Image 1: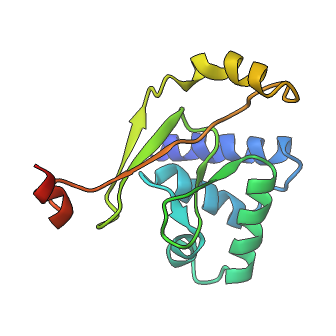
Image 2: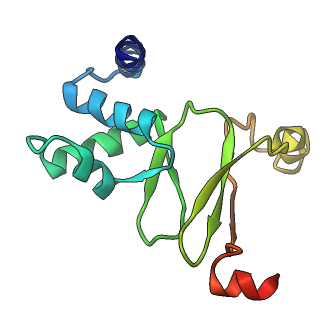
Length: 149
């Protein structure tokens, strides 16, 4: 397990350097937290999980820099604040309960086959590099979902 964590850290350091950023302990810690997390994290969530010696402003700057370099991406979970996940994660999307916030990753959306048509319809765009889909509903266990059964 320790070797796996070291490999992730090394890969993150290389990714940061290729993106023109220094591989600081704080940046590596943010990327490690995102790698370990099963769900997108808010900046506040990162701050709570980070070592106490890392300033909140530093975490906000790191998130801003990582988004700007395409290392992480913002995900809209309709929580009135941004959440982030690794941009290099396998193509997946999210199914989110609008009442309790339960979330599940959805893989294999099949949107890639639409790229050609999208590019033809938007003739100003040369290439689709990524996409994001979030599906919002209500759990079977939440009151509104239980009524729909």
